[in-house]
Every structure is written in C-alpha cells, then in structure tokens.
Length: 337
Image (tube, rainbow, N blue to C red; front, side):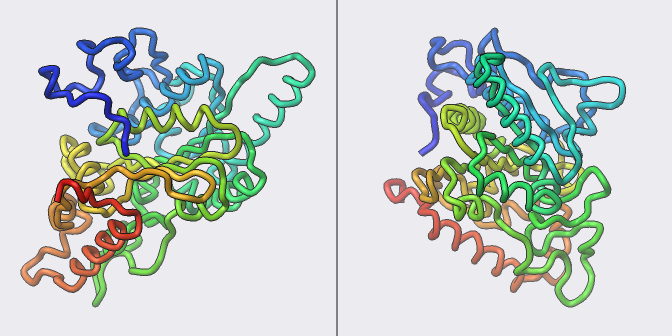
C-alpha cells in the first residue's frame, strides 16, 4: 500500500505539502529545510510532469542522504530544460552524461566514492542516476542492466513520458500501443505504435532480483517521496520508474498532468507497486477501476481512436492490457468492491 498517513480532507485542504500537519507527518516539500535541488528558473514546458517528479524525487533523496548526494543525468528533456548553457537550475553536484551511459557514469562515481571512503577521504556520499525513458529503456539499457547485474550502489530514477519528447516526440520502447508519435503516425490499418513492441523495465529490473524496484506517478507525490526515501535506505542497485505525463508529446492540456497520471493508475494502464529481491511486496490499490477511455480521450496522441468510426477493437485491446495489469499485480482493492 502507499504511504498516506493522513487524508487531506481531514485537515481542510488537499495540498500535498500540508503545513497544518505535525512536522513528522509533513512531506519533504512542506519542510522549510527542503533543498530545492531542482530550483526555479528552468525552462520546462507548462505542466511538465518530469519537472515535478524530479523536484520531489531529488529533494527526497537529498533529505534521506542528509545533503550528501551526487547525481548523474542522461541527455534528454530534464537535462536540456534545467541546464541551458551557461546556466543551471541544479543545486547539487550534478554530472551530465551521454544519452546512453548514465548508469555507467553513476557506477563510476559510486566506485570512486567507495575507494575514497576506504581511504578515509570521504564520508557517506550517495549516488543517484536519472534519465528519461529514451535514455533508460532504449539507448542506455545495456549499461542499466550491467548496473543491476553487478548490484552497484546506485539509485536509478527513470522519468517515463513515453517517448523522445525533447527531439520531436519520436517513439521509444516505452511508448504505449496505438499512441501517435512523429515516427508512429496515425495512418494505415493499425495506426499509432504497434502492439507487442516495447518493454516494461520495472519487470526487467525485478528479473535481475535487485534489492528494490518501484513505480510511482506524479499524482501520488507522498507515495513517490516515501519510495525514494525507502530506496535511499537500501544499499545496492535500486530502480524507480515514475510516470510523468508530457502535455506537449501527449497532446494534453497542461492542467491535466496530475489528472492523467491519476487515471493511468486508476485504469490499470500503469501499475504502481514496490518489489524487493524480485518479488512484489506492495501495490497502490485501485478502489474502482475506471475505463481506459477516460484516460485516452484526454490525449491527442489517441485521437485517431475516437474519430467518425471509433477503433473499438484497439480500445478493447488497451482495456484488456489494463485489466491484465490489475490481475497480474493484484491492484484491485477487494474491500472497496
């Protein structure tokens, strides 16, 4: 289950970082001592889920590491909008790697810190690697698998927006079926991205039996913070994949970012869970599953499914995939049904 110590309606506000709570119950973002590791002034698009996810994730990691954190960052949206030369929005030691070697760079940093620690030259500095789904599931997949196999002491965070958004919204191996991108156009007998392609890296990470794997969304920010905090309490390879809707690439309204992330979870399209050593240990339950149409219709990348002749067979396949996730990960809250 997710980390949710209070229901915000009980305190008279739905604000995630609720300062009306006791200090022990507040989120990291509600704490006046938060680091603001990703500071204001960056150039993310309005409604960018990645900027929000990174802000919460890295501040939580900094809090858990007591401010002793180094980040390696792949090329991609997060790198581009946060570091337009010669400026930066990062207030932590931050290294820009290539598109495909972020996990390897982070591993090297962790190895150097280990040697310095053995020589008494360094304290307990922790390492985070971060990248988008393109730099994680595609270009950087080999380095990432190697990091898992060696069980290197790195937390890798993937901000999953389902495509190469920074370079023109091209398909990645995290692009969902039937979605329109610049390279999976809505034309032909089966428009959009093909079914059966791509990969779900959290499941692959579980197959490596690393100490900790989790998924999260920007709709449940306290859950995200709690998972990052837990990951930072563990040694060895750890992986968190955060769903971060992209208004530009998804063709969605900027004010619907949180709504889309919540619908992805509530429909079963994106299962939210934790796993340790290859076994699922907890899931974020769905009280009442919603139809996938509620999620799809808010995005222009699926507009071709709802034309004059709705693509009922394709929608049914997407619904079946969501239902399979609900069964596979045990997402349905039986007590609420």
